[in-house]
Image 1 (cartoon, rainbow, N blue to C red):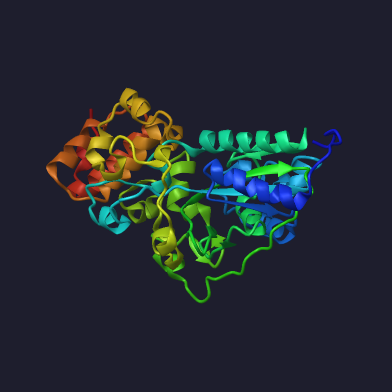
Image 2: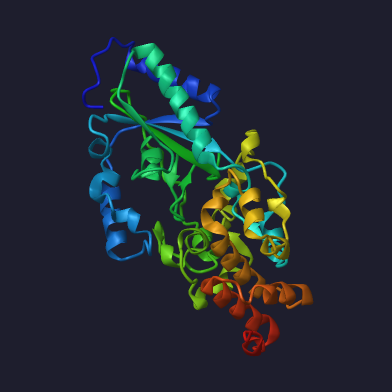
Length: 366
């Protein structure tokens, strides 16, 4: 990017207006321009890493301070074009109803449809192509949760919202059910002004967290977070946190669902983000009975695919263990007692012990 050739450009103000319009046509719900000052965010990140709150996500510290210094990550960067895209599907049953029905699986709303990474990257590339047509060759690099970028902090700098007490980016007109993407660029575009923090004295997200992972305003211990435990964590889920997971088998939206600003969240018109394979209303047993081939087929193009079948079964075993002790659930778990994965067997035994009153010790014998 640092060696991008000189070019003749229209005024940066006019170009910024055009970029917003092009982004809207491409399906982005908002486009902002961020300056690069992330000094306070860097300090916060380093404290978080030092405290070990990233758990086993070692990649969080792999790039050092580049994560908070876009111009070191991509030399020549002057501004970041930050975009957001709403993802909550329309006409979904309330999260509370699904969580209360412990025979059903709760899947984070963002993962019900197709994976967003490719879709947003393609649209960011199309936006870059349109800019190039207007100004000639310029330096840029696109990111969609795909590199060491502090996307929420950049979204804040771009005026797309403020970072709430749940550590998510909140927008007063759209809540927090949206994806973020970035174009790091060497264009000297006029930067937007960050908006005010409007959380006030509200602490609903802190109080609702089922595993007390939000330890204070903008303080998240990932090691306790249901999203981390069911998605990022590769090993056994700590026993003292399993009950708090409830029937959440991929992610958790509790701190979003309870946020007052999400009464303004807009349903998405993007068909790719609409639910597939009935995942918005699936039973735990039906999902637990998927063999690996079915899992791979049903999760093709989905964010859930990255779990793999083994961790999928791990999560579902925990959810079944938190549900009612009915015959069908117990029999489904018994069918997995001798699964090739020791991790799956461990979680199945734990679930059976809960559902059978501790009788599973005899069930573990071949």
